[in-house]
Image 1 (cartoon, rainbow, N blue to C red):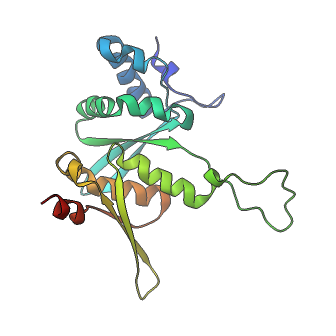
Image 2 (image 1 turned 180 degrees about the vertical axis):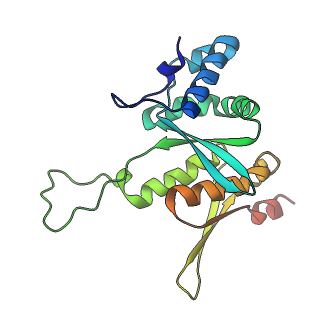
Image 3 (image 1 turned 120 degrees about the horizontal axis):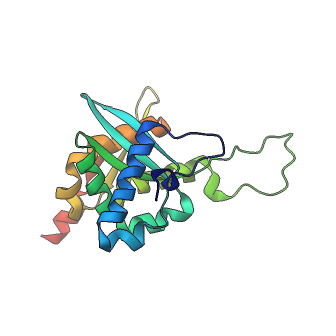
Length: 196
């Protein structure tokens, strides 16, 4: 099995070096780890991008087709762990490749209504959920400053505190890079207070 078979690209578009190395690592995982072989067999990704997250650190963002996202979620923690071993200096994140459709204009002849899942707001919300998977978002606050800029605070489930704390800056930087929105990630204090 070739690494090229793990990448879904339009005809005539060649994958770059990063995509080929990620694909080769997925093929190696499929061949060398027997318990992952069945789960990894049909999985493919569309593209891989490297994002600068500041302080000389970088992150690799894998974009997968939306229909395959659920299959990726079954083995995501294992795949991410293995890929982060291979790319030792970078965090690896997995998100779905979603499409945003424009709002129909006044003169547009639209045959059918735009699906709610293709709106800008919906795509950005889903991207936020994809970034922090397998943890859950338990709350959000949007602060509008006097100058008109917005800061969104996203509160994650406290039970994943130890596993995700080192990635919070990465989540913020990648979300900022992909959407242009300023988001701060943290852990919910209310959930820990109720547990006591």
